Image (cartoon, rainbow, N blue to C red; front, side, top):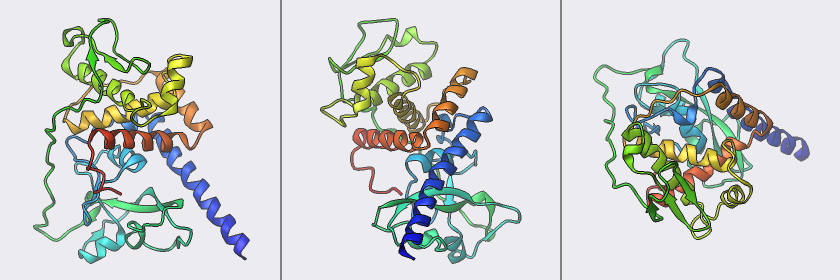
Length: 288
């Protein structure tokens, strides 16, 4: 019996990786790059009751749904607020790390704060727009961020043709702002290279950064996805919108990567999260 239970739980874990990756692929097939969807106007996805911010892949998925407000709630939490789910509304599947005694029939409200982190497991949430509320119900306002842009490495302008991070000499090359089509494009380049810089061996020591410098640039590498996710977070954090129309090659290449590796988006999102927490130390406590 123990063997059967263990096997079933491993199956659940494998399935959630495939399920979430499938949702990412579905977005890409519809022309939406989920990690590039801004949450500047709708707010960083967070739980309505706890106020905890969703992180990693959960943040990417929930922000890409396109709701006016990125406030989410579990069904059990909704009951405590005397709310109700509107007819025909379906929950959104996300994931959390829970211990091996996870009960798949339990409500996420009972387990989302569980300190045991052994397996990736599914749970569901609803957006506040999917729920019926008492008249006069109000929700927290979206508060824009105005923190100074962090720096962890010298920025130079030696080469006016391209922006890049040099991991061997540990500096960012950033052309003058006037060489970019607009300020948004300039900030994207700055944020993108800044996230790369967090991977230096003296900081987060991301092995993929060193491998990319040794074997050449790969626009669809794990490290590049880390930089894309991290830069997108920073763009939203500062309320900057960047128009982006993905090419067919961009879409197809990422789909191929995700189809062959169901762990890629999880790993890259996790590393991007670590990069953001490095740049903004002390802000990771209010998260889930």
